[in-house]
Length: 213
Image: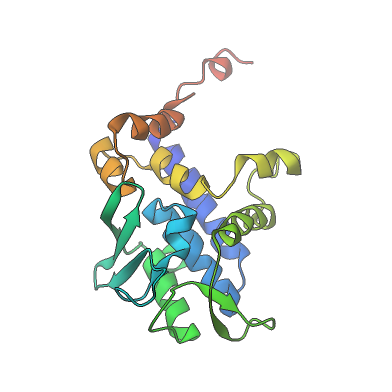
């Protein structure tokens, strides 16, 4: 599989996931979670621990700063504090920064946790921070709804995607120098980054298909 094919497949998946979510308040939130998590290569615990500002809450795991060029996330991760820069996308549909802005605007969130629960009717943002389990459930539910890997049985499709998929997906699809991916993900060693990137390189040349099988 060529680099162009890998990029097209990843782009198509992002679009399918984005379109599978509604545009009500809950959908805006979940779209922002998935796109931000993917673009930032974030752990699910890092996503839900974000606050709008520094020291907004005692259980904060980081905060955000939205700029003209993109967003900067300051995260307290396993390897210590780090900054993750997320640039704006080529179009609003799959732009993580645009999705984040939409959610914060319509949910009227300007202080405290970035990602919170919504009311039962999905029309109001509540104060309670989401748990990381929500992210794992969201990924699986959206994958099924979007039709990604519909060629596989449901059990196999679910087994392929988990709360770690956002982080692994970025590392295995990003066609940039591993140093930048390592810094972005906060990996302590280059070898950890290579483990993900080797997944990208597997079967790039498919000799089975080339043999006509």
